[in-house]
Image 1 (cartoon, rainbow, N blue to C red):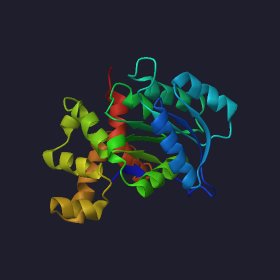
Image 2: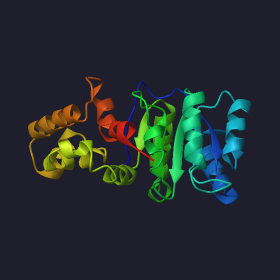
Image 3: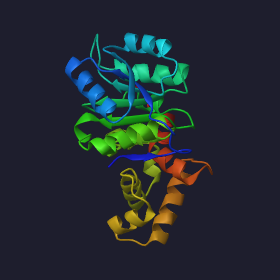
Image 4: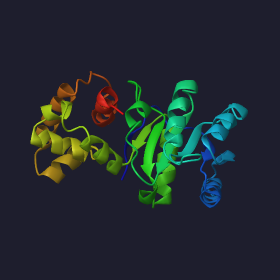
Length: 233
């Protein structure tokens, strides 16, 4: 369901988590869910300032689970906090949850060539608890995850720039790639050969100026790197 990649190996132990969510009910529910799964919740906070303080109080934290809209304005406090965490505490993973796609700071959140320890999921699409826990552990372990709907909406705002370099078929391949399908799955979805898919993906990497890095990592970059390079407030 979620598009992402994993780097390295899975963590040997469950991640230690700080939850930042202004709703007491949701915060308590997420705490119960994680603790029942064996995940240690180090702290529960209701705003971005408290989140940054909790990280200092708990330097052993592995991942922060952050609601994008928190007090005082309930607009972008969470995503701004996520950016700050990635800058000031690069070893701490950030998994953002939101009711809606907030694109203003998305490119900055996923900025840098090393797209690791970061995730962005829509709350309404996190229906499968096991899958959600898998994503949380993936991000905590050094991977990345992004909801396909987030990718779709973010890319739709950038049609007038580098994506214009792509052919209609390459755009289709990119959109299906963003749903997490491998080459075989893309070939089945688009009714083409795997060799054709490989050719299109190589062309996408070239047109979006992606280097010769790890192939799976470049698949993530293909839908995120462009946003980093061209996003504007």
